[in-house]
Image (cartoon, rainbow, N blue to C red; front, side, top):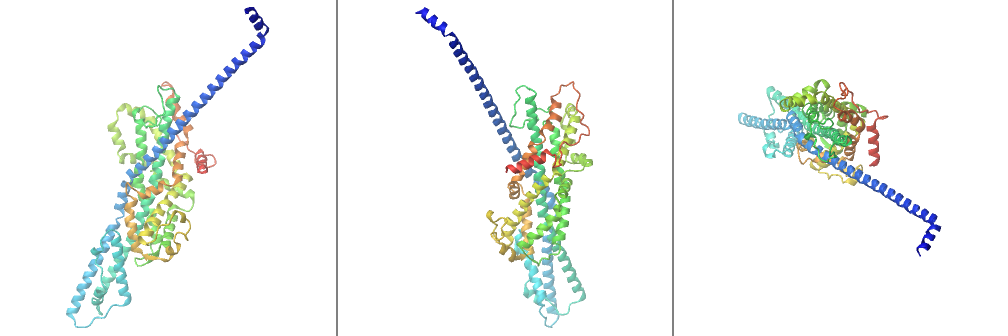
Length: 533
């Protein structure tokens, strides 16, 4: 039996060897394929986790932008409301009307008691002017938050009884002077009400854009700091979702607390200086467009919207290139005033008192270059056509909220247009918007109230409308994801180099962002983001 088995194996040893080889090779190939599949699966899982972490980190960054805007906005609002005190002008007009009514009544009593002659009633033009003027003031005051009972409105009978046929030259001159002063106050009230609301809208939009640029640049640096730490083989290096930059101040990429602090401090310029230039530009445009109006003029919603469009055209300029060049001076200070901003905001004094000498020596040369790089990249982004495009969309959303959702229902008693009626005047009640008119003071009263709502903290409906613009998130994503290679090469490799190696030359370094659409990675990334939407 055993000999027969040996003879069978001897006769079939070649096929058996071939079969065993095939089975072994198949097993090896199968194990190799399975290992490759497992590796690919692990890479896909790691990529998915990394992308999910990056997405969550980006979304958290955008929420931080929202809370930062809400925290900074009251500073600019306080400055703007103090500079354009519309309520004070309203009070002066109220006092003038009250004083004019009391003096007219006193002169009427003296004239009737000292003379037996009958007085003639005023002309129709004088009666109409007095009645309309009083009604305009009452309407403005009551809808601006001041009760109508606080306003002295002259009645028709009081005016008729108090008008004498033979007035002295002094009383005529006094009346003319009062009418002139009253008209000047009304002109100031018109310009102040409109300018204040529009200035707050422009400031809110610019602050939103600036905060998106600043926090996304710092968020990108923070994320790359984790990537560089992982690439250089640091012990237990992980890409963390939380921002733990402050825990290790010796890291040079995205973790320098003083650099981030100084960089974020430059929003002080817009909140304390830049809004003044915005106000002056808006005021010049408002005077040119609305300067001819009087308090007795009646406006339709369509007319007021067209006048607002003219103001925006004057403020924002005619060409995109001109727009991009103008916003930078509102957002960032000139280079020669950067130290002034740091001193006025208290950063230089606080840093000298709060950090030790060793930290200063570590961060001085590299931090200055890093701060310069951040400011240059911010300036390039602000001057880019994409920034201007997104800013225009934010302003469209803000002005649409003010005019369509606030002014139309409150001043013109028009329903806000439904979402399906956008861009269709027929569906949006275009007939009423053109035919129905109201007095100018009623419009000014709504703008006066809405100025406080625009600059309000949480909740801020205007900020919500601006942040609902999809292009804003796309712009933030492009800022967050662009220029990574240059960032790592310039800072990540330098920080990962040995201590004995020479430091890179950073003095006088130029910005790394190229804004030319023909060769800019920023513009190409923006185009891809728009196409994906």
